[in-house]
Length: 134
Image 1: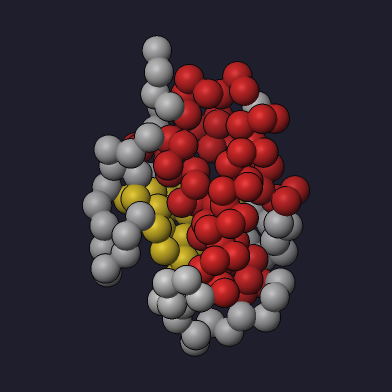
Image 2 (image 1 turned 180 degrees about the vertical axis):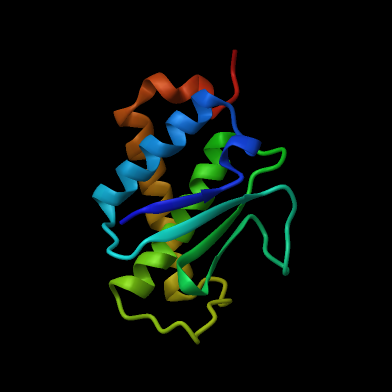
C-alpha cells in the first residue's frame, strides 16, 4: 500500500511528520491494506464531519487544525479501520456508516483505542510530541 498525503508539511513540523509516518507503518502491520490511500489533513471541518471521515476511492480526511497529535492519530486510526472494513471485510462503498454504537463504529472505536495504546507503549519516546509537551 502507498500513501499520498495532502497538506502534511503545511499542517505539521518535521518531528510530527516523522511520528505520523511511523504510526502509519505501525497501522499497516496491525491492519494491512492492499490498495493505495490518500490522507488529507484539513484546516477546518467539512461536509458535516466531526474530526475525520473515510470517503470513497480510498480517501481519508482528518481535521488537523488546533488538535493534539495524539488526537489526530486516533482519528486517523479510526478512519483506517473503516478503510480496512471496506478493503478486507467486504463493506460496500454505497453503505454510509452513521450508526452511533453500531457494529462498524464500535469496531473502529475499540481498535483505534487499542492501536493508540500499543503505539505509545512501543514508542514512548514520542510522548512529548504526541502531547505537545516541551
